[in-house]
Image 1 (tube, one colour):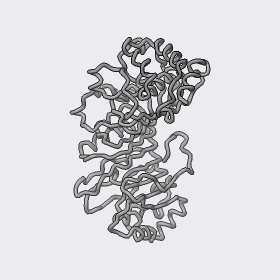
Image 2: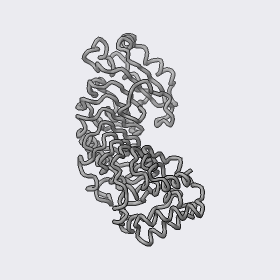
Image 3: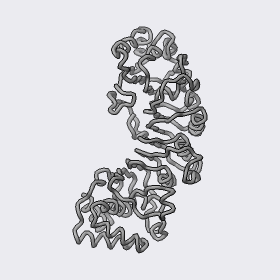
Image 4: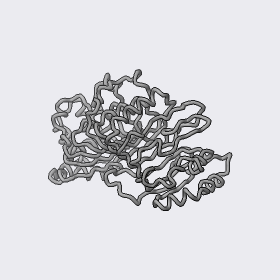
Length: 414
């Protein structure tokens, strides 16, 4: 479909100007081979871009190569849909080539250049920069690229109209002192992005997380999904300070799949959310907001969260700590009889614990419902309450779906 789509876009620019939603997930596999007529048409438009001679030749030659054709076609498609409002793309580094957009020294410093970098990222040819669209209507980008390095994302934060930005697999395993790129590419409070989602499978150092967050001036929604390796009070403080910049604007926060273990130290939580007066939706691993120390002496839930919370989901609970939830002196005990003062806006409450093969899961599940007074209070308040085991410390498929509330301002799922 990619070849006929690009053919239509190039032949009918008035139709291309009407394209708003550009979802390229299904077009990043090997496309059909262009015909000789298609190659002539595509080559003509590549020559019109004003590339350097060697780059122009490479792009045209790539049209006849099954391994490189898709990257060039997708780049051309981006260049000729100037009025898109949303972009979603997936990139497979095992077969889509690196486009020769940056010189060799920059490549060693910055890393792989995805096909969208020609339109949205840094490149070396000034003529190409003058010919690319300004994408003034582009307000949502979701990049499902594999192994996306942090510095390659910096230009996206500079897009004037962009408000919603998501990365599927971003990485930077090193602390700031060992970065081989300039952090000044992410000026503090310079971006108008209000919804940011980042996930990682390898490693994203807390220093990089903090830097990217502080680039945004007024975040309303933030999602962080991935393992936090060996967080310390220092790195936790950096994350806390970056989040505090959003304490007056953040309404939705998700920090999950961190795989933070219960340990004999870390007597302070990784972050504190008490100052986030506008926070309404929270999905978070338990050891992000509670200390990871033994023995466990935890505060009431209302003492660590702002009163503005409406929907709350806490994950990563060890089964042995479920008694902390609904016991007579547990996290929720002060909800009883205090509907007007203790988490008065709460209407959704879910706890997710991982399976412990050394214990009887059913026993823990039944135990949580023994406090009749708490159950009665939750029913009086009409709070949806659920406890479940997702089988693994890091779930693959979440057994609980939440789709009965309006998150039109936050397009990603709870």
